Length: 292
Image (cartoon, rainbow, N blue to C red):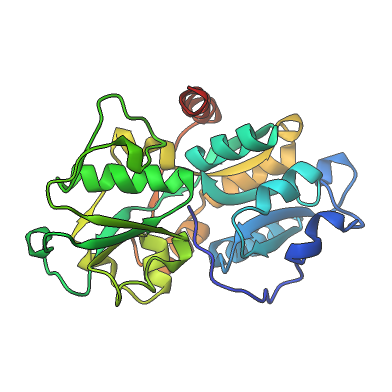
């Protein structure tokens, strides 16, 4: 997932509590009667600021709309209050579509942000004490990834056949008697001083001033098992062939935007090039797993 930083947006934005109640003049894809493409992002996504500047050079107006709550960008997109969003990975999108009955679809991949296990008390995995308290994200899409990370690190084992949406009930072995503490993903770095270790998205860690190279263990952003966690640019299914959206997808892969994305992630985000068809197949696979 992309990170969220600001609580009081500096750009003209939709106010969270009243977001879906607003009627916005001129809202809508520029190919369908509007003159501005509104893109919902998570917090201070300066790579999208650069994209908006590049789009303006081509005569395309892009308004970047920041959100500070992961639950809002998909609702805003489904309601037509924004035209695209770019904040979520495929596992989160599958969960959101399933829970809300929406048909939001991925247009293009942006990047994969590694997930890491961080600690202020241990220098390596072996230093974690028996009974260590470990914080991890509590939303279903990221809790499963966190538990899989701990399993890869050899700290726990999961039941055979455990899928992407693992929970504590799927833990088969916990030989070091870890005490797992699920918390809001944005709180994971703040708890470092109170726990033995915390599972933190590298983007969140960077914003919190946690050095990405201090992780005790990380997943591989290029690994096949991390593909469900590729972040995407998404639209409503009915709008996926909008020509202005195709321009935005191309601009996101351009050098100015990618340079800014690498700069703001301290080099931790890895750009992934997957076609729309590949992303759709992966989303379908993840959705089937979610539905059991």
